[in-house]
Image 1: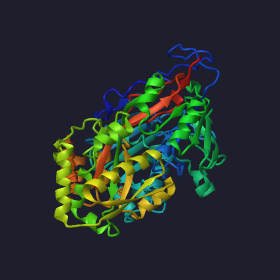
Image 2: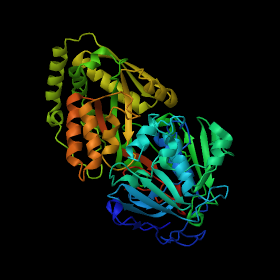
Image 3: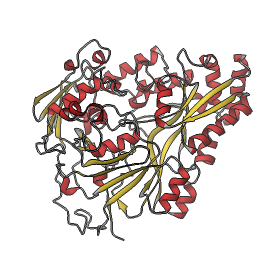
Image 4: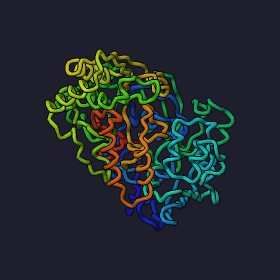
Length: 543
């Protein structure tokens, strides 16, 4: 599929036409654009580390679920292989009133998988559903971050969902009103929370509306099979508006918790895509399979969340202890000796490859590890806390276990801190995190859009995914102010300095996306730092 890029991106005040010229229906023999000979087998099978908890766009909160939902549903806009905005259900949009009103024009040939037309009313229904406290969406806060009028008040229960600042002007025109002039709002529509949902299906089937046979979706694929903790399958949706240009006919996701078992199954030809890789094996795999092993930047940061709530460990209320724990971690050991996949040591939260982000100079990042260790020991001594034992939880993964083990050894050797490690499967792990039943917790945050606020907003007091319950009034005020300035870069730098000084979290590394992809697969978005891949853009070439 070909589509023109959003030329002026989302800073333009005038309407920006997103619609491009799409190729005609493809021949079964060759790719319509590249001319490559296509394989008779147009299937794609990939590995999931964990079972996604839901396929409901308004209830999803994890990356693995988003990968699936992106195939099953389509939002106003999508992304190309470089992360640029391209048409989704909307063909173009206009920004007015100093970027506080956005008007999206929807294509008239968009259809639900049952044949119903996709209309602006479907988006209004979905967005009101996401912000409604009755829905209890774990991503309801995302609507507040969009600055849509009345979203915060509705989430707080002070207004009705019908008062959300979004309306269907007609079936194919959606108007969105914002409190603040947010130039990156269009990019935020590519996340699942703002995807449409089919009202009749939701109201007919209730919590089971996403089950195979019940689900009505509007994406390039439909769900046909789902066996929890084993696999799911999605197949090409003939009702999709661009179905003629979708080449991959069937996509299967296999849940494989063990990294080494997953690698064995990849070698056996059961998988076309494998991510993540077993820790430390990327260099050897790149040498063994240079056409299949890849490392590219990925807009995610790996960190340990600290429980700042009342249930948190008393010792962690002392900033000296938090800073000592962070400084004692030799991040070079983690990324260079353990992971070996091109990751970067992290001393701040925002990923260093985030668009427009200028990395501030974080004081402890400029020290040698020996200097950090000395300062860490001094801080622990000054705290007068002895015989400290902390509980660190992580979701089941050999890589997470290895990192936690190495870090716990560093803390023991340098600071005398004992660490109790506990792992849980993904759904249980999320519940424990949500209830603040931890001292420290392995965490990762992947940008929902490519702008620094997607990271820094997470550590504001009211953010729904702020599971450590960190709260700093100055951070809250600065991030609120960042929504109303033309260039928030200086504010972001100041917030990063505060977070580092306060050690709100313990940053460990910035992700690289290390994976294996079958050499006959094409169309992978290597340059999309958000790692947003769409099966409709993939294809398999002939041997």
